[in-house]
Image 1 (cartoon, rainbow, N blue to C red):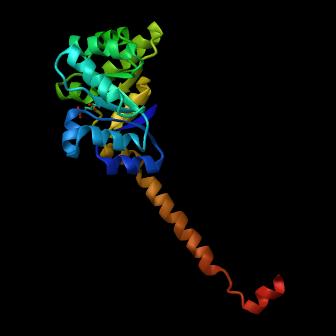
Image 2: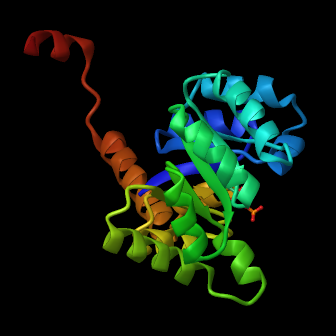
Length: 227
Ligand code: E4P
């Protein structure tokens, strides 16, 4: 399973890229607003350091979404155009996918919606697990069911587990067979943490330092004689 960052904050993304663990980024209008930067400028900046960057259309009908999607797709070859799982969004997504643009269908909450996205040639489907949990439904069950339906139907659209709220979601997404999980920077950082790792590393370094301190100090004459 690939890790994507669910963020439009350049500094966070640059940090994740430096750690070597992320393969892409998902943005949405809310995340762009949080970053406080111009949409195009910020997406281009992010595309400069990482591939697979989803950028979402904000038009309200299919024709406008097609025009907007074409414009976004030209920003950078790393861009994946995100369309909503509505009749207008899928209609626009079909045209854009037909032109060779990679499409991420967002705001998916059911297996049937995920099947509709495959019908228009979506590259990615994004089921929102956390938002289903928020309304007392089992979000990860929906992710697992989409993976299972896609496998049975031999569908190649990638399942991207979205709306991840905590590290357990990431484990569950991997066990469900998701191709990708996108997560906030705070969740990515939490994945690294384990008290036994911290304690183990502390002890290793302490023991190494002890061996260094215990080493006899050679005089420069002794060292020269040994050469
Ligand atoms: C990603 O593509 C989604 O837009 C994002 O994961 C939604 O997350 P949220 O439910 O925390 O807003």
